[in-house]
Figure 1 (cartoon, rainbow, N blue to C red):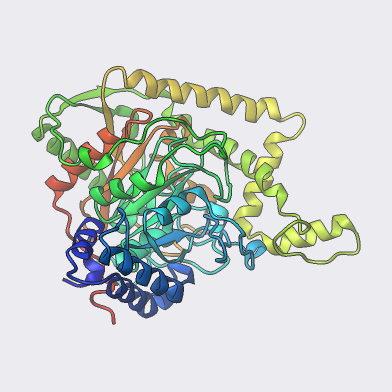
Figure 2: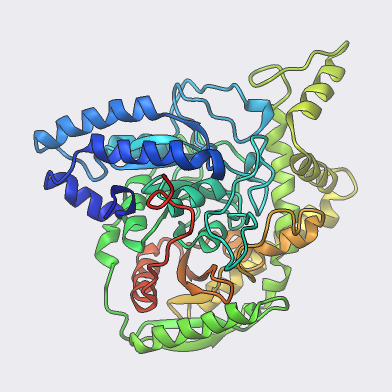
Length: 494
């Protein structure tokens, strides 16, 4: 098997057994990036030289028997995490030359545990998008293809670069951020596993903000076990983040393969929504059957305020985005476009620096926060958000985990929905409610649809109970036996 096809768990074992070196492992991924990234555009910035230097350090540690959990493992880092001395753009022209003097907590934790960063992955600009087509550095192409069709497909968004890189073998795992589904939906579109932890489980320090009450970092990898390994390193309390929760980080790997006998799995009626494709619905039913066979009890539940989730999200998130992005004014950092007056400089800088989707969301957010509309929109949305959270809380008094589709359809072609922002927003219909409630959720690939594209199912758990998600996810993974790989990948494209 090619080194780029290994899981993180297998690669870590192989490194410790000295079957191959970290330099060989990282070199194989650097070569894969050089061969495929010009096509996929999964990375904005590559760090091949620094990665090889880090691999040499990893090999030294391995030789001394001082390996850490991720020593020598090549990872992609979403270009929303500040990396000291390495350009961090948020896929925006306004930050195209920004080099942070500090490291985000999540990436610092990964480096502490020996990870090697091979590059900064592409994303929708400032994480605003569902298809990874709003990046100032160009769209990302999904490595999967429809059967008999060479059309370029979207990888999902906003963490589409991370998802495409992992699926294509350009990284063994990657970081993502999830505000309304930006880890889970790309994972489903690209046939990998993506985990959004409970809000507050991973520090937001050093992660460029979109919507502060929703943003949460999480792992993306090819297996559930690999996500458990990555989350183990990424999670933890951080006093520099006021929303970070001070609670123990369990050994997530212990949950993999755990017995599900007696586990109660809720099936929310409201997720049988209009627009759900027949193949997704069939995959959902198959997932229910697999969990039943694993000893789970299936329980019908109701989340009555789910239908308001998307509308509520597109009030709350743009409002917070309007506030967060006010800091990009051309004065303190980022690009500056001169103007005759201070106001003219602000306007010229923001017009040139922000793309159409970011400008649209800033305007939406500014509107709902404006005098006369704050109570009518933003305050009301916060009240509905509380009701959405209450629905989940009440459901978890009856069940241990929820099972739903991740997205209403498989991946679509670039350009198919780009002229209809509302239709694009509907891709998040199944992922947004868990984000609004701060619940942990994970997407697991369970099969291929009629056109040969991956289909994902979503598990939603109680706050800070990622272990149950991982246990249930590993059971789904084992039952599905998903070993399919995309047409464009390191193993076959040289």
